[in-house]
Image (cartoon, one colour):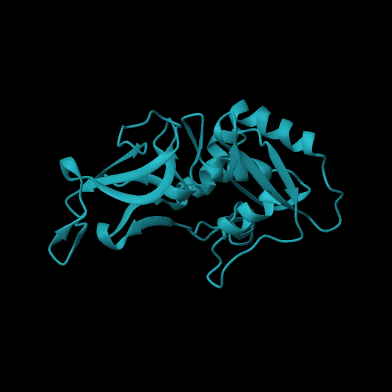
Length: 232
């Protein structure tokens, strides 16, 4: 999984002369297909532009040897900023298992990872494709909502996931952990924070305050367990 923003910022501050690199790849892609290099890390940390600073949580940009697209559940290529499944194509991509190819038309490999690409080509990972929230036909990345919540001084951890909605099919639900020594922010405050940074469709219908979020032994957030919490 991706390193939390707070950890990256602390590491860069503690080791300013160290070059940090974030690489993204899969077995089927012969390892790295996207990279956020040392210069990207330093530029993002030094920037006052929220969009540039957000790159600290990105995978970086695609390597010159590969192509990356974001597609919806029907395989349609999505525009910049829209969340969907990450597809990759290139000479290093095999996608074959025991002579059975996992490639789709045109030689594209569906990674089953969810994310989006910003206007400068930086790729943001938001989890597995099954984690994407589909509200009224609009695909939304849980990761972008969580990143906004974590900018609040009182929020130590956050999870966004789909909750049932009669009107939209799915809506956004969030579970947050309040940082020790801070008072819990109001639900309306968190909703306005998200509304001010993202589209109004990302504003949660359900908000839960929890002592901690469930993770497995590998540090993976268990969203299915959070969905149960939000259903109560």
